[in-house]
Amino acid sequence: MSEETTIVKSILKEIPIASIRQNPDALRDVKRDEAEFVQLVDSVRQRGVLQPIQVTEYVDKETGETLYGLINGLQRFTAAMDCGFETIPAAIRDIDSVTVMEEQLVSNLVQIETKPVEYSKHLRNYLTHFPTMTVAQLAAKINCKKVWLEQRLNLTKLTESIGQLVDEGRITVTNAIILATLPDSHQDDFVSNAATMDTTSFAALVKEKRDEIRKKNLTGRSQEQVFEARAHLRKM
Image 1 (cartoon, helix red, strand yellow):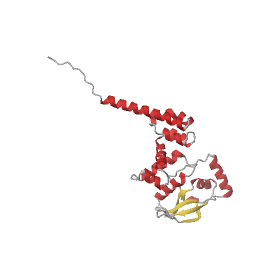
Image 2 (cartoon, one colour):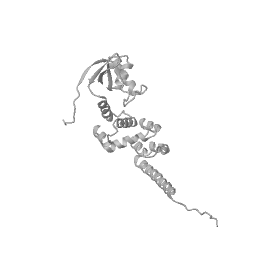
Image 3 (cartoon, helix red, strand yellow):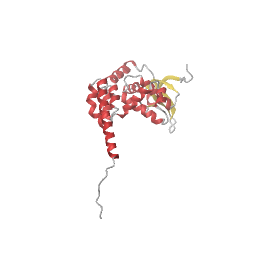
Image 4 (tube, rainbow, N blue to C red):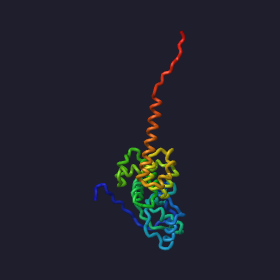
């Protein structure tokens, strides 16, 4: 075990669902109409919550009530609520809010169901909490390569509508990363290409457009800098 590894103890017990507070910065929303969540609700109703959720305990300063902040397990927690359960098995952990964010980023990194653009927005949100943190430092924290992280962060440059297409799986993440290299004013023109073309062909097409934009910008800048002499009549 490395020196940087920390062991966080937890207590496992049933806690009241009414005392649990959701994390406003949760990495995944609950889509109640999706087939996966409907199946989860059916499973919880028949068999209960088999895997405990993770929470952190704190005391409400105004009421003095003991509450639990949800760390991990939003889908199971919501399913238990929809089933009318009053309690849920939970691992109570003693960690701070920063560690909560880090653990959510790491755990959702390996979960296929996490939406790519949605996850990228939370990566960007984490960096805003720590303005001095570099991309390389964040990559080390969540155990991924710096290049991969830079590409994922660039997904936040996609327009809202295109980001939704990526999260729905209608555009591959690889093509989305390529599309994000274009200014947002040009991205809509290449949506259909991103959805239908293979990565190699699409990358070549986007590179051609980027070169065109760069050349146009350089030409316009050079024209602005050229001084044009004008003739003027002078009185005798």
